[in-house]
Image (tube, rainbow, N blue to C red; front, side):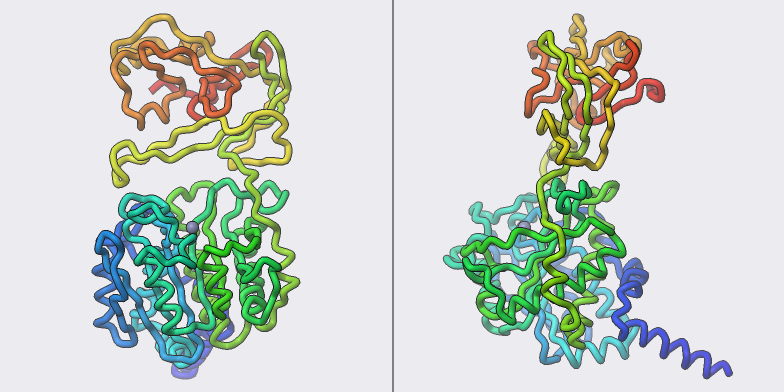
Length: 477
Ligand SMILES: [Zn+2]
């Protein structure tokens, strides 16, 4: 009985994976998550030893396929020996690291002793070709471009950067059936007109101006249709597809042209996931599910039509959107929407403290836009907060005054002689100005004036640095 039970459990767990049960990958991800990578700012030096050590594990082959401009080694990690070759390159844009994290987790899964039967079946059917962190010089300083400021994704024809040459050489050497072009996109894309921020965006890139669909491109569309179906379970309504205008200089478009079915995946944004750890998990699920689908040809059950129903990626999201406020300015009253966007700024070097600077990104009728946070301000009056007359020596002196009482009577800008550390400024419920700085304009795009929100003659909220502070709940700390 016990043996039968054990056998049954084995069969069930094996079938689970064979049945492409993506929920299995979802549940199991945590177990294989590479714990030494936990935010977006890891470097080549962090992953290099992990990649090189894979060579010691059976089933893996690690090849050094070239060096970046600054001499950092770029690796090709091979696993499996099946006829279906799948090439994946991550982080060709240095500040787009989500897929690299997921690939490190996939390595942990593949090298573990678990699910041997599933893995040996997969290895018979596919050859996985991973190129993690194609742009290590960009990743070093967390920027998009490489060390000579070339965008590698516009260098597919001219191939002037060593990193681009390496990708082209590897593609040509293996001539894979599938290619995964793995990126991160702006946080401000929405899915069609739904108002939902995009968590995952796809594209089956065009291979010519006419945007024709041959079998190579059709296969990318079909696989994307399957991945979309899977993602709808985890991030419903937050999946979109990129515009397919042909970009003759981009790698995705050219690799499609060279005969590899290419799938662009872009990680977008999710509220409460600034380090993209949930999106990393979804990437793990998508890539693992793709391997199984390609191994068994499951993507053939999906259609071009299903791909085409995925909504378009459209820049339509703010971090904070305040709608239909009665804005009092320049002796007039206007009904306006205010859209704020944050910008991540490093206060001291890319591994230093990350701070968020917010600014007014748009103003007017923003009814076709949405936000991670949306506040319906109808019935509220908004005006710029007043500038307090006294100039403080430093932040400490300001903090030690009755600033909370001053806020309640309409002050929101304070001048301080000594420079205030940026991290602090980002969280304060008021704006700090330099000794000789004048009041920021309002409303003015690119500015960030502190604002008061009043209802029935009483100040209820203060908006500073892109955050709304509820004065009733605000405790002076
Ligand atoms: Zn990119």
